[in-house]
Length: 190
Image (cartoon, one colour):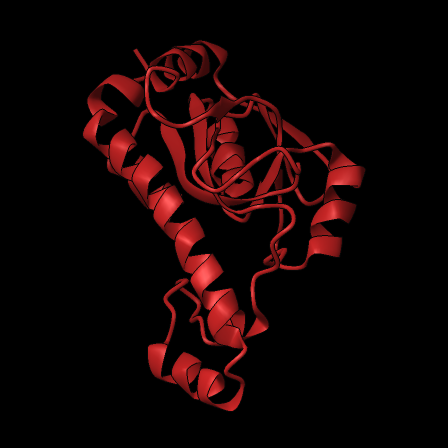
């Protein structure tokens, strides 16, 4: 719905920009993925704008983060567990997974518009997202701090997992900030 609203306001290209979970064990928090294709949850391959993608890859390789190309898998649910990440990687050979790029790319295809996906890895393939974080997160991805603190009080061992997740988010945020500072060079489809 948000993508269609942007298009109704005159948008002429779509970017899926945000975070993803790694499926490939070589990826670390802060690494950037610029995929050639998105594999949606039904297994359909959605191609992205190659000239825009190639230009963006060249620009991003000048930055501080490692940049990878390969496919991203789309999912209708959060892939939080290590075994689930491994299974999806085996099934799709995708480097990473997210929940938005397939929908945005399908909308661009439907409207015959160029599309680009830029995703920054937060959780590595060997890192599980704690269930307490997922349970304490609302529909918009915002962590409900009081609910999370209540879970930590009941299970203090979560502190270690939350610290690990915090370090991963800081690494991803560093890459995203750099891209934001250079957005005019990176995200122009021309």
